Image (tube, rainbow, N blue to C red; front, side, top):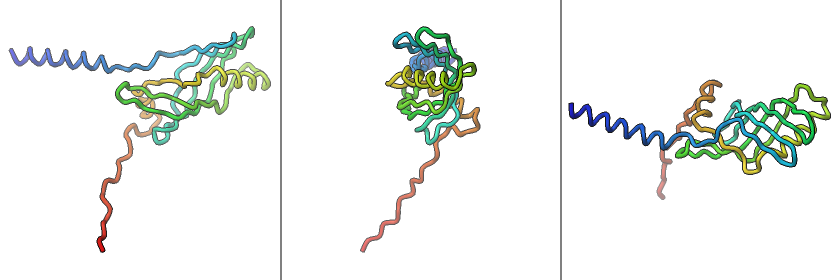
Length: 159
């Protein structure tokens, strides 16, 4: 009985410490506003994460120009990534919009909306959940594990 109680106490401590290491990424959707314009961005959906350094994905967006009607669309994003394993987050930096599709916008309005969305994206980037990205990797059929390194030492020749 005493071992059982000790196990419960250790399990409770493990749960408490696990909660302290919980995901620290901000929640979605996020809103960015400047000069009367507003961009509401949903969490980017992963397409690829090449070498765990370059992320490409799509994000649903609602863009409201100053004094205009909201435009709903999809932004194709590319970003460099920095992973913080301790905090379980991935920072996206150098965000770029490859293409943007706004369903009810004329081609000229879509071009202006893309430029406005680019201006409204935060210069310091975005933060995503590492756990969500790893789960998305598995869903897209990519490996969530890193490639093993060749640690065989080279042949050393002495003359």
